[in-house]
Length: 242
Image (cartoon, rainbow, N blue to C red; front, top):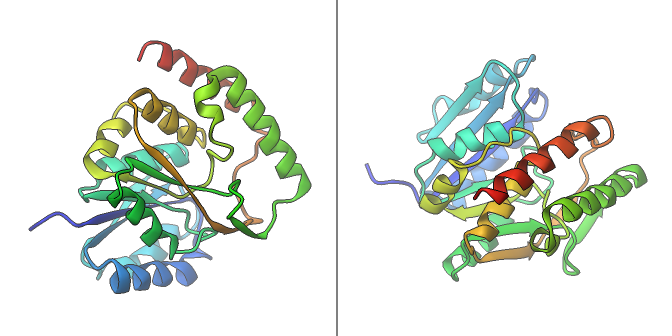
């Protein structure tokens, strides 16, 4: 059996309520617009019925897989395991809340076809449309995060005003090789990914997105502040030895 054109990675944790609404939307979009696909749902230590609910939708879908990890490790761990288990010509990961519309997939694939090694959604571009802004405390946290990120990792990563948008696409083989070198399990895996890609001279294309804030986001910058600083230092040290 030939490899699919597109592998889609969807990390989830305690998402039993959103899955019945959004999984059919993801599947319907892929079947209509990108029929040569595989879908990998990467469940990370959920304590609700996420796995059971996912199985009701995915068990009969060819090319759909559920990767379930009993102990919560973090979004970065789930995405990494999904990418390494994928076999598509292109690999894309997105958030299950669909804060970035599914139509953005086609634009990302056009970017890869045009020569980019990675395409990332950015909420900071002038052409992006923010339908539901983040609350003030999260915007302040994002500015502080970017300041710390740039101070510790330098001018390369500073070119990305939005490294944390949960929508990114990569060339499959190159992406799997790069993810095999990654170690950050939490939400800073995006920074690690971009930093390593820059070191390898990847062509990274930013594209505007239509995006709405998800009030149920599980990222807590202030409460997880020490982990943020710790992981930034880990990335900094790894880059020095890269």
